[in-house]
Image 1 (cartoon, rainbow, N blue to C red):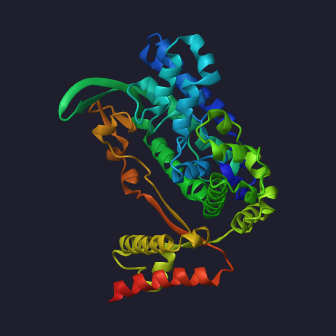
Image 2 (cartoon, rainbow, N blue to C red):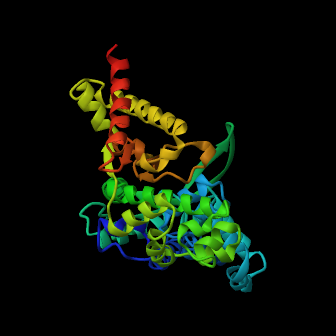
Image 3 (cartoon, helix red, strand yellow):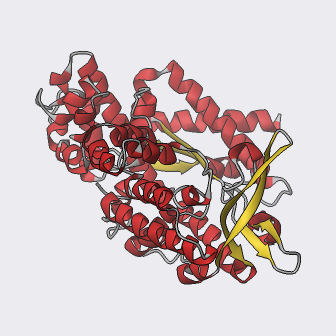
Length: 427
């Protein structure tokens, strides 16, 4: 399965696989583990190292077809496979993966799954797999940038690793101090490289992961699969155009069966499009044909629509006002969808946000920040505190809508929502 899902429709070179990424994550994870032993000057804790390296290799094993787009289907249907982390957890604890890992110890599969499932690392070994500076990000930032060909997202990988140190971070719960925990920190000479790392990831989201065409294809894909699964669950699978034994049909009947989930991949779903195009369900046929022939919906940036309507550009609070009004437009359109459920496939809403750097929250643990060692004060400070550049970056927020290009009725629905919000503002 492809690492970047539908991104190849925008960046033709983005055909690299999840498998390649997982091997790369494992390789970088091994480098980070070796650095731990070198910096500390002590033997590596091999049991912990083995667990995190297994987690690095298997962290994405639960991904379904077309990456995060398939997760959206799971969330809309409230399935157990709603996130790839949940599926990774199941696949590692059960079946052939568990059998293979069990040769390293009876509790090894559970320990590996637990590392992946944890929202924050509890020690520096786990930080190799899950933190703001981990093997996962260090691999996909370099790999995705190379394969898409974008000029954004470059990082100085060699310099970052050369300036890695081990530091002891204080922690506590409800103002009660606990024993400090060790983690990776960066020397003061790597501040600029750390800034570039954070900015690079942020730029990749803006130019690659959140690209309007890629997100538009994901939305069409989601609506198509939801419709197919709905027909199968209503015993109307014959309307989809798929044979009764097709992997998608089998999965729709029993989505909690691991083997049926594993029978799906990008080629299985993409290969079903010609069959779906010939289906008797008009909506399924139309959506499948649009994906096959790349007849995508038109994308509208709600912020742009609002700014044009109200001429907010240039005002002191233009950005905040635009965001506020955009959210109101989207809320209004979502209400319209609730009143017109049969039209839901014609109006696709895309709301998303990405924080460039997470602020320190004790409840989330102390290892999710990038720490910089200040040699003069002999202190470890959060990169956000150290860098004015990082403090200045604002979260990336999306308010987009997608509608058929030739559907005048849907254009009027969107125009009406924007006009009503604008009218409320001016009145």
